[in-house]
Amino acid sequence: MKKHVTKDRRVIPLCEMEDSHLKNTIGYFAQRLSYARMVLDDQRSRFDAVVYSDEDEKEGAEDFVERYDELIGPYVLEAMIRDINVTDSIDLIRTTLQRASKRTPMLADFYTTTEEYNG
Image (cartoon, rainbow, N blue to C red; front, side, top):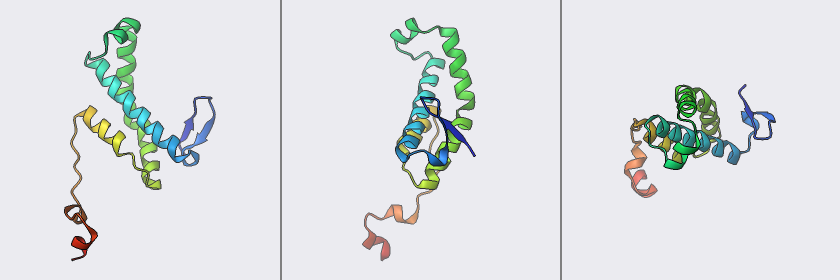
């Protein structure tokens, strides 16, 4: 079972995380991925470029991009099991990775009301 380490260094199973904590953690990983891509693509702000060492930051960004899916995967799966909406974070990840959704619209997506769907 995957464990989560909190800011205060407590270790808890993902299945025991509060819904809001789980959703925020997924959002945090999505934002870190987006920032890591900006570092690798040299799109950081001037402040960040001055304050942080380019070499250290690029190395950390490369490492994060290489393993983000291993980090975020268990959290997203737990959110799916609980039916927690993390669409905003997933959309940020798609945008960052320049990937489109391959979701095939369900029949119900073509209808605007339940009455239309039911016939």
